[in-house]
Amino acid sequence: MNKRVLKLAAPSILANITVPLVGMVDLAIAGRLGDAASIGGIAIATMLFDLLYWNMGFLRVGTGGFAAQAYGRRDFKDAFRILVQAVGTALLSAVVIWVIQFAFLESAFLIIDCTTEVESLARQYFYIRIWAAPATLSLFAFKGWFIGMQNTISPMVVDVSVNLLNLVLSVVFAIGLGMGIPGIALGTLLAQYMGLAIAITLLVIYYRKLFRYIHIKESLKLRQMKDFFVLNGNLFLRSVSLLLVYSGFTSIAARYGDNLLAVSTIMMKLMLLYSYFIDGFAYAGEALTGRFIGAKDLKSLKRAIAVLFRWTLIVAAVSTVVYALADEFLFRLMTNNQEVLASAADYLPWLLVVPLLSCAAFILDGIFIGAIASKAIRDTMLLSAASFFITFYSMENLMGLQALYLAYMVHLVVRTVMMSFLMKRKVLSKAIA
Image (cartoon, rainbow, N blue to C red; front, side):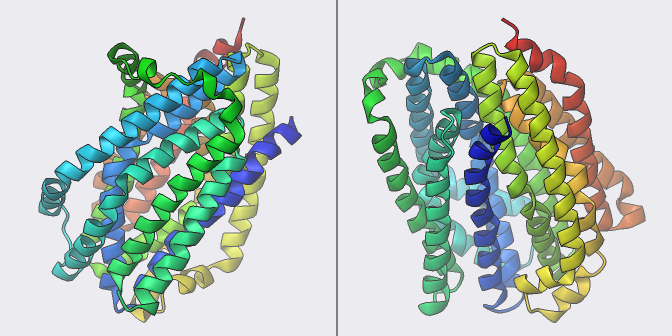
């Protein structure tokens, strides 16, 4: 079981490592283009895309869970039906996003409280990157489907390619050609479409012998699509809840000025840095849980869960040690702005807390996704999002911005406790023949 877990997790970990690195490069480029406003502009623009794209997270999450269970049943017709429906939904959603982009951006800045300079930079970034929507959303679907099919090599190749292309192109356009923030957006735009081309190529290479199971017209019939949307409705609410937490984190930090917005943006990147290792095991959990539930193999499912938790605790412990040793060094990699660095000192201790508080929540998320326990996932995320805002607003007067970090930790604990309580009824019971 260790070999199975590592075979699935290792490629995902390698791919995931490039995700925060590219995000950090974007911030590092912005941090050297001028002042804290450049970092804030990237942070706000990224949050705006989270508002658009995270709601579509079910394209990866739901597709992965359904494909994994179809794989466990050896039902390839159903597996390809899910892929066709997911990609079709992605393309339709991208058109809708293009249509509403202006109204969305104007509405967003009626709510977001930031400086004029930060808003201007965020707008520049947004109106370029928005044209990558079809590629970005389609990649969600392909990644989920590949993972569900027990193939983490293909999404690794796609993710690493996209992220390295993003890195190189952003540096070339933003610094080499002197385009600044628009150059970072253009680099992301081109990288996404190149990634989609790679994903399609890998689909043909690995699965062309199974293409006889593809029935596009039948898969896209209204009845079939209706079932697809009903099944993913709860996962959509999960995405909304996650979005509320992460966008709320950035929006609240923006109220405290450009310096603390820059600090909080970098802190969130650093707090999530270790999670990209954990996510590799979460993806393995998703694939194996779905597979063993589809095959009605309760014994293997229990063994897989035990192994996943052992690896998760190891990663969390090592990450805590790394954060303790690296301390301010990691922050200095992100910016050379002395005011931002000085303001960061009070918040660095949170880096020592986040791995152990969050590791179980992340791995349980993958397990529940593989089980397609959509109602349990929905209820957990709604409650944890509520706990985030209740904690912050009840503690802000006492702790100031520190209350934001406390609220983030509380929402992670709520996720862990609730999913642990529901594990037997919502996950294990599905593997009983």
